[in-house]
Every structure is written in C-alpha cells, then in structure tokens.
Image 1 (spheres, one colour):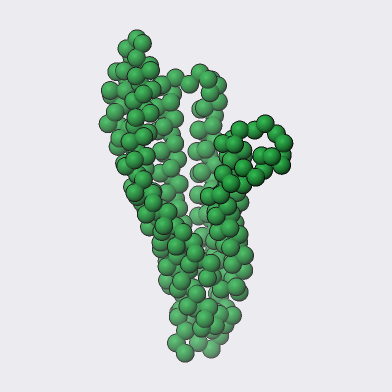
Image 2 (spheres, rainbow, N blue to C red):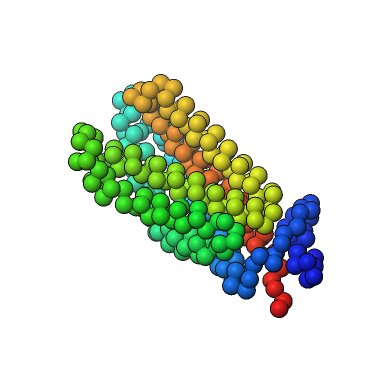
Length: 265
C-alpha cells in the first residue's frame, strides 16, 4: 500500500518485508530512470536465458557422444581419436553457439548501458559506470598487453600477458556490477536480494574450486581423455549454474522495480 502523506510504500516486494522506503528522495526524472534500469535488467535476464539454452544444448551434445567416446577410449591406441572427437565437439559447439552468443552480447551491452541511467540518489551509478569501463577494457586486453610488454621488459608471451591483464579487469567488472546491485537493493530495502547475490557467488566459487581441484589432482600433463570429458561436463555445469542463478537474481530485481509505486502527481 502507498501512503501519500508520508510518501512511503510498504510491502513493495516480499510480504515478509516490514521496512519502508522513503520515496520522497526520487523526483519525476528519477522515476523515468528507474524504468530504464528495469528494462536493462530485463535484457540482462534474457541474455542469461540464452546462455542457459546454450548450456543445455552443450549437455545434450555431450550426452549424445558419451557412448561412442567411451568406446573410442576403451580401445588400445584410440586415445588420440577420442581427443580429436572432443576437439571436434568443441569446434562444433563454438560454431553453433556463435550466433546466439552474439545476440546475447548485444542484449548484455544494451542492458548494462540502460542500467547506467540509475538515479544518483541510489548511490549505484558509480559502480555501474566502473563496471562498464572495465568491461570495455576487457575487450582491449590485446592492445593493452601489447603496450605493456615493452614497458615491463619481461619475456612474457603476448597471449599469456593478455590473460594476466584480462582476468583482473573481468573480476573488477564483475565485482563493481555486484556492488551496483547491492546498493540498488539496499536503497529500496529489498533485504532478500543481497542474500540471493551471496548465494550465487558462493555457488560459483564452490563449482570453480571443484573444477580447479579436479584439474590439479594429477597435474595438467597427466589429464586423460576420460578426465578431459568430465572436465568438459563440469565446465558446462558451471556455465549452466551461473546462467540459472543469474536469472534468479535478475528476476528478483525486475520484480522489485516493477512493484514500486509510480507517482500519481
């Protein structure tokens, strides 16, 4: 319900939420910006739905070749053929998923750009701008690494240096976008949304840790085709869990922003 005298709106999201939000801090322009942010969140959610479909398709492909792959591995001298099968599968997935990934990337860019229009009063604009800048720099890691290589004076291969530059930038982009979501939820007193974000982060760290442990158990040089196949499955499961949990988070924000009381005057 909306109390016009106090300018406060109660129970705007979950029925269990008892906190109130002072909407008098938001003017008419801010309400328009909130609509833009909600559209941006929707596009980001659709982006993750596309990723989810890609992951499911990958799991179906892996399941379809599992039997023939095991047969190839079980025969003496056929390990090279089994590895070739995995490489061919990876190339096929890359080709088939290229178009959806491009569409997903466009939706992600537009959605994030719309989120930049978040009202300043929420305190979330700085983090989202930082996230966008870091994301843009990730796409320029090759050029950045090329300029850093002579400056550092170290004999580091350019691809390796690009990875060393790209990973911190990606982590910075991911972290600042998470801070954007946390500040937005804190402003609107949606206390359940930070819990969702924490759950998503925990799941991702757990799955990635399991993957690294499985890779390092026998050393990268001793990875067998069977273990490589299981690693492929593990990566796809991590990919799918990331997409599903991201949809869960974005759905919460989309619902919360959609249930805010629009000004009547």
